[in-house]
Length: 318
Image (tube, rainbow, N blue to C red):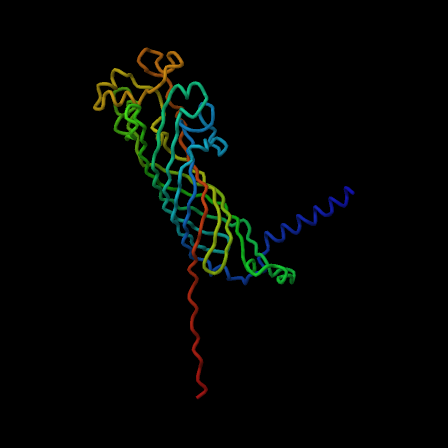
């Protein structure tokens, strides 16, 4: 019985490997019909940084650390160009909304910290894509009549990708008094640019997108799919949280004074001196200095632009 199971399991995997790697359903140059593609994408985004994540301090920068209640919309418009059967270049304009809120965690330190944020992200990115395998449904082993008409000739493709991008962000925090969302960058909540504080951060940074995608070609014009993309960045200020608390007395003398204090340290005080070891907040941990990351999962719809057929002229016999 064991040998029979082993035999049929082996046959199954041989068949699966054959299907996934077979290209014999198409002519050698059929991929050129799908060389140019306009892609529309929509889905959800998640943030991995000092704010957000599960019930712990910091983040492990993996999808399992996502706080799903804080997922927000993500949209993209992209152009894909096939250089060969298995290699594509994909350029895109992306919009994502990311958010984080300490109130949603049960971790004592973070819940007491009581910070929150949201930020629009506008990103330009380009990536290289590698098709690990493509397969075609139907027309195999002479059994095409056994498949329904709507499945004939459809092909699927599994893709891995990596690239580089540039993005703009502008974090906002919720005013504890008015409930309005206000820009955090001018408030210098950690003393950015002030004496003894860190330098001002840039709201433009670089991202490194990596991910996987799966898509199905429906016909000569359309395809649908799904992709998951993870972006590691070179900034720790997407959520306006990075280093330590700045002295309250000095921050109060800055341009925005009391407002800066309200956004810098709205802690509940449930943990005595957790944010004020020197009596005024100086030097206490506010963030973890790890670079931020964000990710998205999106449904994709692609529109191909196949080459126009050349009209052949019939030669006259006369």
